[in-house]
Structure formats: structure tokens, C-alpha cells
Image 1 (tube, rainbow, N blue to C red):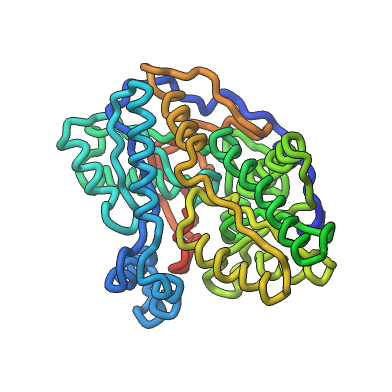
Image 2: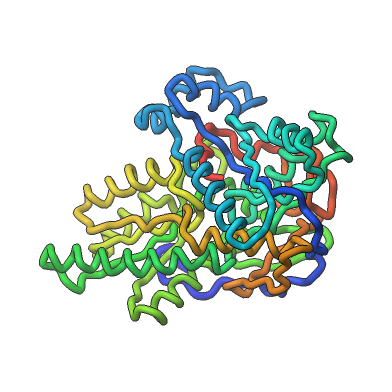
Length: 413
């Protein structure tokens, strides 16, 4: 299948079983977990040190890759967006009469996950349900969060005292998919209007679903299990989940608005050593190839992202849109879910799937790949760097030695 041609439905050969489903529990609070980001110029290098800790990368090299933060005043949008999402979740929970506070912790910047867990315990909480700002299955999107919690519980001495579970990956939950359906339809209409205004009405347009590139080794390990082998489109749950979500978005756009266009999955934010293979094609390369094929309009859909953080405002709004402008292409970038009412409602639905009170037994999934597991299977999304304690999985430690993200540019997950 050509990476720049229309994609067909991408589904797993094997259906999801009930093996990864957890029984509902009485949770004390919700933990919103995210990546974190700097909030001023003086924060940039300390933040990048946190992201690359243990890799021996000198500050001079970190400064070289800091330009997208420097160009935005040293501020990543991600923390403010998480404050807004936290407030929106609190409001939705309150509106439903669910008395669960929402706590917030980051991997790489204040508020840090270990302190958030300690504060939760000191406040009397004993069972937390974690929602992450990452929808898909791969090491950095799922297992690394489970490791962060496992290590934080060990470091704080709360292992065995504080229980933390995690909601399922929600790449095909209607609450995540439907804002993209709305945005993609509007994006196609917008680009068509731009072309009409330019006197090129009816010229070819193309939809690019963009997500963060990851090393191909991590992609191959995504969704893999030692006890329940599954076959995925293009050999990876990470890729298959995006293709399945994109297929559903375009199907719904055409059914509901009558709009359609060829589409493809592309990648962005590749980093690390040049000899290490990462998922391709890069979005800018894809745009250039499409222009050579006669395409005159581009709709960029940030399908891999929950909010408009640095990887979106720099890699898409700046670099990809500049590529379109330089090639004379009409272009628009579709919004991320952010605090869209359907997304926030969907996250609370995911919480209710797991709670004894206010339980929602139905687990909707917009693609044949889901609903995904509550409990990650043994070996899923393996960490090749070495064994670390994890939570919310059928195994307690993982695999064998590899640095999946050797760069400082992972603001995405």
C-alpha cells in the first residue's frame, strides 16, 4: 500500500478478548498524567535534562534542540492545556454527581508524578484511576506511564499503600474520534473554499493524518504480547490503531457531510541518531511528494495528539504549514480534541467504565481494534532499556535494554 494513497480499513486479524478487562472498583480520585513542559526560558534546559536523564547528553546539545521552545518564549503550551483539561474534567464529574477529585502529575516538569502521589496519599486517597494524555499503544504512550507510576510508588515508599490503575488506551473511543470527524469535515470545506477563492475550484486535495514518529523497533513491539499473539496492519498496533482511527474518521466525514478526499498516515517530530530507523514518511516529505503529483490543497489532521502542544504548534503549525506555503498549496490544520465537550465527556465515560459507582458497562469502540485492554498483556510495548516496575499490567516488569526515545523532542506523549 502506498503511503500516499487512499487507505483501506486497518484492523487486527484477531478480535480483542475479555482477558484484559478489570472489574470495577471504588476509586478515591482521578490522576491526570502527562508529559509536562517548560514554562519560561530559564526552564528549557532543566526540562530537557529531565527528558534525557541518564543518556549523558551535554547541555550544548540540548541547547541545539531547544529552538522550538525558545521561539515560543520558553513555554510549552502543554501545562496550561492540562490545567484546562483538569478543570473541564472536574466540571464534567461534578455535573454527573461524581465526587472524585482530579489530581495532576507530569513526567518531566512540575507537578511531578512522585510528589502528586505523595500528596494524594497524605490527603487520604488510597485508590487512584489514571487517565493519560496519550491515546495510542506504544512504549512512550502507555508502558512508560505505567513505569513512571511503578517507579514513583517505589521511590516514595507508597508501593503496597497506594493503588494506581489506568484506563484503557482510547484511540478509538467515540469521545476521542468524534472531534476529529467534526474538524476534518470543516478542514476539507475550508481548503475547498481557499481553492475556490484562488480560482482553482475542484483542484485535488489530500488529507494527512499526522502522528509522532517512533523508532520502528518500538512500533514493532507495540501491542505485542507473549501470551496472546495478535496480527496488526503493517505489523504494529501503533500504526494499525492510527490507520483504523483515520479510516473511521473519513468514513464518518463522508457519511455525515458528503465530503471526501484521498488520505494517508504521515509522521512528524522524528529525532535521535540518524542510523536508527523511525516510522516514515515525514509529513514535510509527504507534502512535497503530493505537490509533485498535482495536489493543490492539504488538510492536516493531528490524529496522534490530544492537545495543541509544542509538537503541534511547531512541527505542524510552523514547519508543515510553511512547507505548504512555499509550495503554493492551500492548507489548514484541524484542531486537536483539547477540551472539546465530546472528548471531556468521553474521558469521564472511560472513568465510569472502571468505577463501581456510576458504572458504565458498555465499552464503545469506533473501530474493530477495540475496546483496548484495561490490563496490558505481558510484554506489551516492551521497554528495551531494561526492567522497571510497572502498574496496570498482567506482568510487573519488562524486558531487555534499549533507549526508545534518545532525543529531547518528545513533548507529544
